Length: 105
Image (cartoon, rainbow, N blue to C red; front, side, top):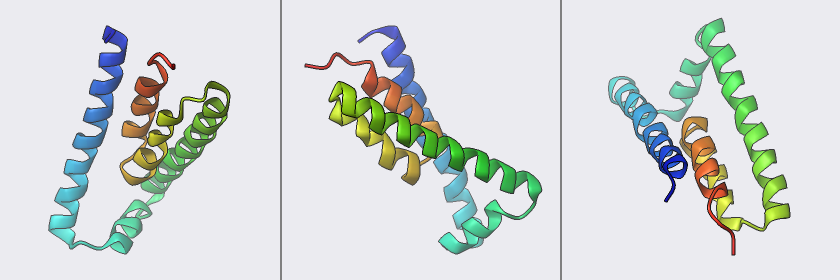
């Protein structure tokens, strides 16, 4: 595996673990409520702006992954979509780059 692919994989793992540790800490402190978490994302203009920034980035990544997968037939790259929406863009984007840079048979 190339150093670039190892970097993408490391970033995908970090992008899954690090943000999730903050989410789990928040849930432990505030209760396991998804609606409470969504409310926290809109508590002020800064968090609302960040929420929209990440939402737009997630949508753009999804469109890009689908469009490229249709051309390259690299179906495993579509794993980035659930990773993006269930974990976050910090995991989904490097995961997509990791999966995209493998050789396709």
